[in-house]
Image (tube, rainbow, N blue to C red; front, top):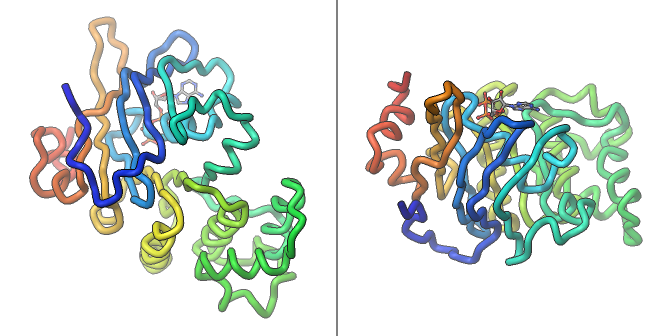
Length: 266
Ligand SMILES: Nc1ncnc2c1ncn2[C@@H]1O[C@H](COP(=O)(O)OP(=O)(O)OP(=O)(O)O)[C@@H](O)[C@H]1O
């Protein structure tokens, strides 16, 4: 079945999965994923717990290489080139990740951004990049007078925006976000939603979320994953429906998509 949707405004490809299957040891967890992700769009990955959303996200910048016994079949293309033809360091710089729980280093706000630049051998003006990244993450005005303060003294929402600034500083082309607001209150979540909207002018964003309001509010494209029970009792994740967010939320093709987005999914 062709799951590729009506094309969004930007149809420049950012990432493309071709017949991608993922295994942990001998267990197949994601089967035959064909998915094109478009540049300068926000794409959300939604679906029931365990369908493999985070697993897929980790495959995009090869973080899965660091998880023992993980194996993939099929291909992921970035710039039309298999991601395994890049060095892992390069792919992780160009495809950044923001995690579920804010994870700033126990260092100053400034150092949280400067460290990655130094490790990557950045030769330019670090002060400039620190300011630029904090501005892009809409945190600059709140922290500009105490850049030497320990990042762990910031609120959860501020810490998450700092983690976004840290990722932005390395000038990625794609930002992967794994439930970036799951530990945040509604005000901080709303700030991140606004920020995502700004960021998509510069980056391609792929986000996992369980928050249907957030998915429908901020994303352009939505991919709904579901779980198939195999005859041997094993549960396998698959891509059930992929389309413009408006269609997924208001006129999906599959009843299961409708049930999931309206909270009537068992
Ligand atoms: N390191 C691992 N080793 C073995 N199995 C794993 C590992 N990580 C995840 N799994 C299994 O792979 C399947 C997919 O997990 P994953 O975390 O990707 O799902 P998810 O859709 O992101 O779930 P959630 O919404 O609950 O975060 C689950 O059955 C999970 O138990």
